[in-house]
Image 1 (cartoon, helix red, strand yellow):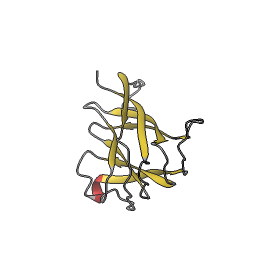
Image 2 (tube, one colour; image 1 turned 90 degrees about the vertical axis):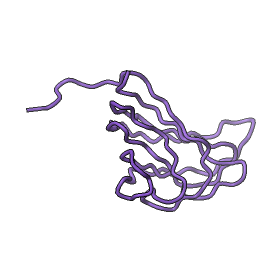
Image 3 (tube, one colour; image 1 turned 135 degrees about the horizontal axis):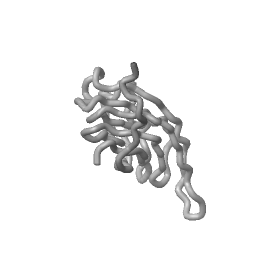
Image 4 (cartoon, rainbow, N blue to C red; image 1 turned 60 degrees about the vertical axis):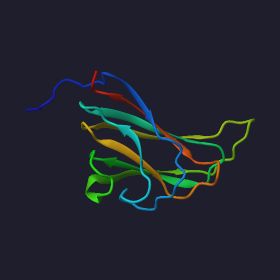
Length: 141
């Protein structure tokens, strides 16, 4: 017999973001370097619909790695899993055209305390880098 026969919906929207990421992190387990928290599930859990990546000025081409963390230390590989990656192209800042936005659909429910972490594969040049915005919802009021 099914444990849950009723659909679950977010109690409220939850949009979270990182500071500008510039450091390189070449690990595939999220343990070394500077992973940043893009989303933290509330005490009742949360839902992440998608991640949006946007350059902060002129940015070097890189790969963004997305990890799921169980809410514990990122320093232990047992607490992180590489969930997905997305290629981010070189970006030149200009005042006459918009820079590209890269979206990575996730559509996942996270247990209470779980987090979405992001890292970049290559060092960004001075004045450049990437923001990550998580669009989702919280199951807590």
